[in-house]
Length: 150
Image (cartoon, rainbow, N blue to C red; front, top):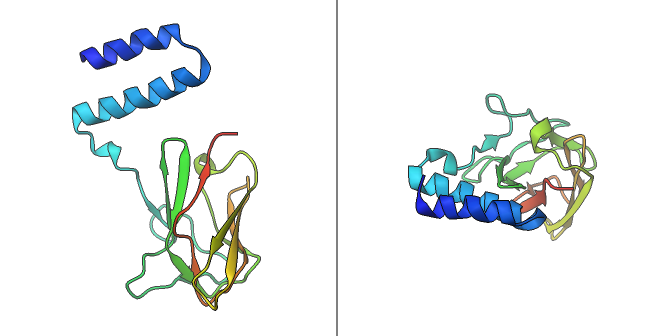
């Protein structure tokens, strides 16, 4: 165990609550850096591939050179990215796995680069990712994120 990790362990015993959470995250980051662990790179789930969730309600990846809809977790925050098209506005695009669902419903407002529309992404506690408003010509999830904490 490195000196920095031992110091963190000692601080952890002396500090309550939020500080412990920060120390734990710092410790995990240090352990990852010390080992050169490839797990430091979060697993990215590409919607419709392998064990990732399938598209719903007519949504598909936009294609071309644009990245497909995907999601991952960094720390206690989930991130979405990619471009979809063709589905029903107001209906679920896909469902997040149980471990990556928000503890409560989240509304995320973003600009959709389609017909100058403003899009709204509704991420429900049951995992549904819904394009509530915008255009289905193409709907961007780029940069959408939410906390996994209550």
